[in-house]
Amino acid sequence: MRQPYNYNHQEWNAPKPRHLSLLEVALHWKTPIKRQFDLWSPLPNQGWKPCIDSADTPSLPERSQGYIQVFLDGGLNQQRMGICDAVAVAKILNATLVIPHLEVNPVWQDSSSFTNIFDVDHFINVLQDEVSIVKELPREYSWSSREYYATGIRATRIKTAPIHASADWYLENVLPVMRSYGIAAISPFSHRLAFDKLPVEIQHLRCKVNFEALAFVPRIRLIGETLVNRLRDPSGKLQASGTEVLRERTDDTEKERAGKFVVLHLRFDKDMAAHSACDFGGGKAEKLALAKYRQVLWQGRVLNSQFTDHELRNQGRCPLTPEEIGLLLTALGFNNNTHLYLASHKVYGGEARISTLRTMFPLMEDKKSLASANELAEVEGKASLMAAVDYYVSLKSDIFISASPGNMHNALLGHRAYLNLKTIRPNMLLLGPLFLNKTIEWSEFQHAVINGHKNRQGQTRLRKEKQSIYTYPAPDCMCRA
Image 1 (cartoon, rainbow, N blue to C red):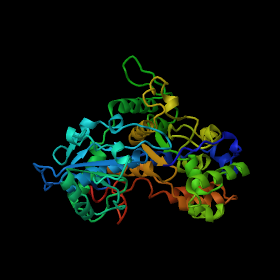
Image 2 (cartoon, rainbow, N blue to C red):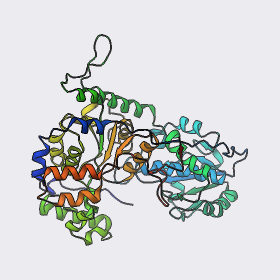
Image 3 (cartoon, helix red, strand yellow):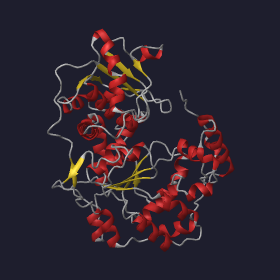
Image 4 (cartoon, one colour):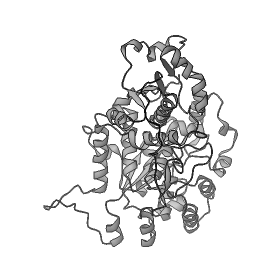
């Protein structure tokens, strides 16, 4: 099992801005009014609507074939997808699903359970007509536990489920075990159900779980709603009539935009920095530290390390730094009056790494700047709960943008597509070469950025073969309006 890696904060030199000529213009750039209007306008109706309730969905059989347990590793969003797949497998097998067990993440050491994160009663009630779900096993099966499977080879454990297994695989390999013993436990289970060649009702069910059944517990929703309200009303003041007071603005466009905010998911942790094998401007000390970290964790199994930094950037394979994401945001039309929420667990390099981004966006907030320690006490130090709060705020934002692909990026891309909400996907193949060009002028950079992102702002994209239904819900879970 992977162990957390401790590192010295002095292992790198605080990087200076790497794109000074662009930064100097960006800090004083005035976004044209029409550009602001276009940027903040909601997506038009694209002719698609959620479509997950089939008239011919098989009713819940009177008798279950047995119990199914799954043990899910990974972070919150990977576990979320695993939960959806678990419900689908239970439906395929006509089994009773035991509320999934969430493994302790070896890096973040968060032991939060399903019931700590998701509203279990809501989950069961939404799915009650399609899948039988229980909170815990009956007494005769109480021996089937995480500890039981960790201490020996057990006949009821299925540990050979292939990645993206077909429905037939489960019928041929899991159903016999369940019929023999009354129970089957599948571990590992992440990414263990195919996205293609499944019945329509199974695809609909997966989306029903993801977009309707998986609601966060009230305390997470309360914290999330508190943050959203403070982002929409930064003044926090109320008139005697009870209406919100907006800070005095002279520009009508600013008034029109008041109360709106963008969420930036800045995934720039040490894992990502090391695995990318890119140079992020921290000098020789940082390069050596990341190389050592990469060797400890992946022991030479990192393909990117075979390429130079220039080659990787030319291919769009380097994560955007906070400085680069700031330049992208400014070129797109965001400015120093933009209310920006930073959804991030931990940025490699801390405040020194994001100082340039904060200079560009002085109204940038995060959980800790918007809420008191007392308000965050129930989620502080628990990575999954903190991620759940960020997910909630991200889903409520007017615009969402992720600095690099990953499970949260994919999950929110799909959820916001399902709700027809604006989501900007950075064009990494475009941005890599742009940032390599040290002589590029702001006008050329901005023109390229705007043109390169016209069709990357939430326009409906139909899922292709092997792509995730949770990232691209159309056309499986959406139909023409």
